Length: 273
Length: 243
Image (cartoon, rainbow over all chains, first blue to last red; front, top):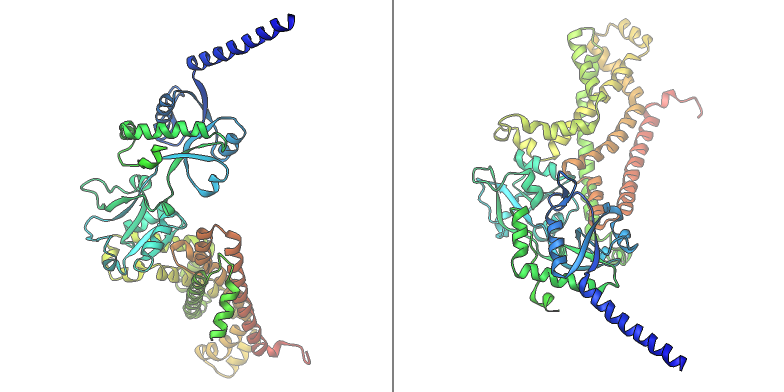
């Protein structure tokens, strides 16, 4: 008899506990801690009161709201950001981390959410068609040695252009301005800061479109990083990334912080999953 | 040839970094380095002989400017001189439209100018020291023969001064070879430039630089060997008898 009562009570406690747990989960959202390296303007910085702000903060908060998660930010310097994730100091990294094969061995990436483009720049009075390779013969191009842009130019234009490789992008800009270089192929944000090429009256101009492909050279872009086993969490954020792209929220945020396009629209196949 | 080719391919198989492509980068780098160093040394020596004679002149207006030149070029790093010649000249207004731009547009000539001026300064001082150390007796003997100063310089002082300068000059040649590694900072694809390229491409600093270090070692060794032979011939009279 006693046994029966105990069993019944235990069962009841278990069942009600389960219900209670579910009820609580519906009330209080699951909490997720996001690791970020501060500052990296304009992606993340501090305002006058010391509060975090920036493109990635806004984007991260938006993604969390859509995934129905309670998010908090954890600051972590760059060189310890992957070890910090693996040591459970936070549950995901949202810190302009580019997807690379080396990192993919340690962490799981979400869909990429942005990628900075590269641009061809030349003097405004030059008439150069970058797609007509035959016409480029003998022209000189400056790139920073060992960058993805060096790889791209070497691979695609190595047989026509005379490639000058520099130690820093500042030196490339110097020689474009001195007239030693006919062309330069630069990272868009760097070029945007160093060379005034977007105004009508500037002595320089962009040639052709901004370039982000092939991904085998330029990479897939920056993505959130998770521990390998947190597949469910990654899937929630993937879905949220698809959503902010689909309804234009991403573009609105982007326009708020940038005056150029760094979007990497996920394919329908990626979002269908 | 075909056999050699086959042997070569076999040697390189299973090697991701030292492919025929990267080796051709090193080869082009070797050619550029040798050209750059040889030309600057040659022009440097031609400049240094009259400068060294002028450096020992009694007239202040000849002596002082040469002293100032050697002082400045020996007193500043070659890298800075190279930067000044390469990036500095473009700040002269209108140089892009002048005939000088043909020379300064490429990276090779600014580097050649910087290297030449640098080695000429050191060589001037080496020769000057050797001329100053000419034995008094030799000069007195030349005077006793009634030689003019010109003739004495040509027949007595310079030949013996060059012999005495030889070991120090051999060092200067080796220093110049090593200093030429800075040429890669102004985009010249010399040996070091090739190594930088391979390093940046394959993220393999150790292999890229150890290989180039071996090439530099070989070059240095050949230069040393050459100067040993020269010293043995030209300084034979200074060796102890029977040695």
